[in-house]
Length: 162
Image (cartoon, rainbow, N blue to C red; front, side):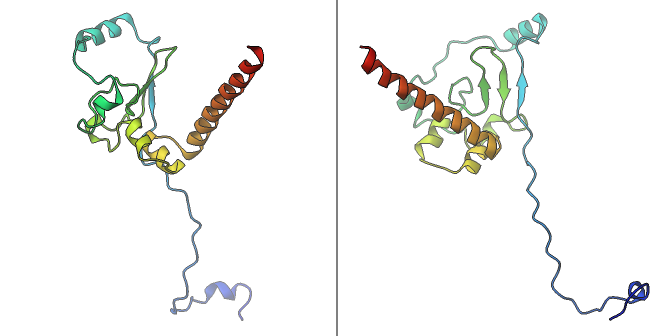
């Protein structure tokens, strides 16, 4: 065995041994993060321009799941509550573009109800479909389950009050 400064001068053997294991790095997000448009921050001129470019039109769109279940996919009705392209905050009215780098017709999944019809899927799959991290999906799931538990607790209390 060679020690000291001489050890640095010796060339490594040409014999190839097993490559050192690289630590597995997490794959970085391949999609762009969601972008939120605040309605409060838009000027009156921008709001008026939006009204002129996209006037409210009276056109047919499905009102029930049975009407939309067999329609073409990707779903063109972005204003639908269950469409995955945008989310509208019910109080503030802010618009969250879940997939700012993708057009609606390029999406593989556009309807949350179609995803729910397939049955249970993993947190990773939900995160990929909704452009969220697995941890954020878990947080939303926990909050939803807590709300359901609170509703169940309230219904039990009604039995005692009535």
